[in-house]
Image (cartoon, rainbow, N blue to C red):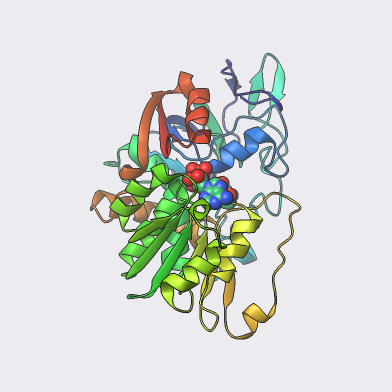
Length: 362
Ligand code: COD
Ligand code: ZN
Ligand code: ZN
């Protein structure tokens, strides 16, 4: 549980039974995503405290409320940090995965009936993105949970709740990286490394990883990066270095850090006639992007990608099945397996750049 200004504390929390169209899940494994750290730092918009964060988990359905037909007790499931209600105009639009129930359009700090299922010492505790995976039991609407293959190892496939599909999908869905192309990936955390996996799977011939932490380079190269560079090693701006390395700029640039300066650099490193820049990270609330509009005039494209463009209910089970068929290797991202009691140590490791993905098991 998190109260603003403090690290996480582990508390006894009462978790009420699911109401109609809600599901109570026993979380078996959860990862930490960079966004959870944004919540702890207070830089994720519209979070109410005290809150139970966590949005990259996997578990087993414990009970279901009235009217739930998509899952039943005993099913292995992944909670979805991006809902797919299946009914709103966004869900019916094949060109977006951003359901109107996401936190971008309505608060997900309380259940849809505006009450909480969490109580601690008699006081209400808030939900995070409706799924709060840093909890032994958690309740979520049925639009934010999906059944996965019974054979799926939950301590691995929890990564399909956010980090892996976010990065991989940015390359294969949002950018649609073409074979033989050149790519630059800014930020080599769990998300950026998953972008590299997507570029590699798409047949890119040059994949350049960019990070200020050189310790990330070896994994990036294992996953398909052809070169890795640290902007601090150059006198000139990194976009100029990338343009020189590729002739006229990269075909695709991905920003997976969540900063405006690196987004501007990613944009400027793209091929001016045909490059595609994909914004994967979320810059701090209230920030503004400033660039010469002539950059777009000759054909450069700037796009955003949330959760890799996947409609999550439709796609996550298929991705998990693909993992069981050895089509993806997100396990490479798991650097630490820790007991849940060490969750704060996990955040310390992430902030110190010593871990990529920490997985917590009950
Ligand atoms: N230049 C180069 N690299 C940098 C810089 C810099 N100025 N600053 C930091 N980095 C590197 C770090 O060394 C690190 O390796 C990497 O950037 C960031 O990695 P992590 O491990 O901290 O973060 P991830 O990969 O787990 O997550 C990154 C996101 C950008 C996706 C995340 O923080 C974010 O912005 N999330 C919100 C976007 C969203 O909605 N995502 C989907 C749901 S969470
Ligand atoms: Zn995330
Ligand atoms: Zn919807």
